[in-house]
Length: 147
Image (cartoon, rainbow, N blue to C red; front, side):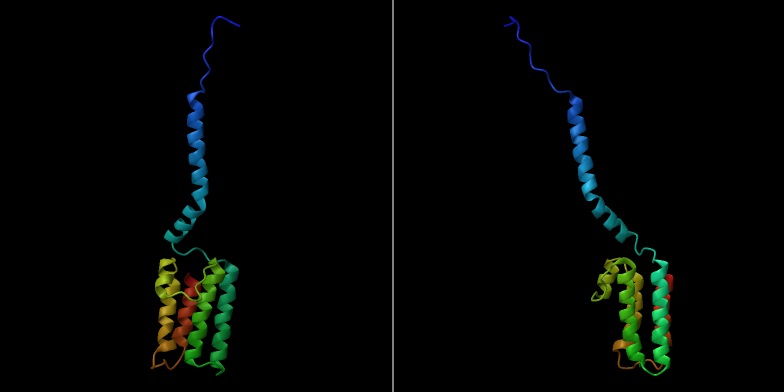
């Protein structure tokens, strides 16, 4: 046995730095989905895929054809258009807007949908139903086209 004892070796301070950086990186990667979700909400509405927009324009045209043929009243046309706009939001971004209130739509970053549905409410629920559904059809087309 040697006469002198050798003291134990200490780990480098770099290991501590790398460990802290590794933990911070892991936490950041863990929160990336949440950050992306919050960023998407802050940015408002996102681009609608072309095929979805085209399909829903055709569905509005179908509703208009049924209205002009006399199969739908102004009130039922507004109801179908309101449901169609909610389905549009669901298909475009996966947003479950079927049972959302206007306030919930706005909080979810769906202000154009909330505005469109609000304009359709008059024809759907008021006692004095508009004589024609022209304005309601225009509102639905506007939401689908501009959104």
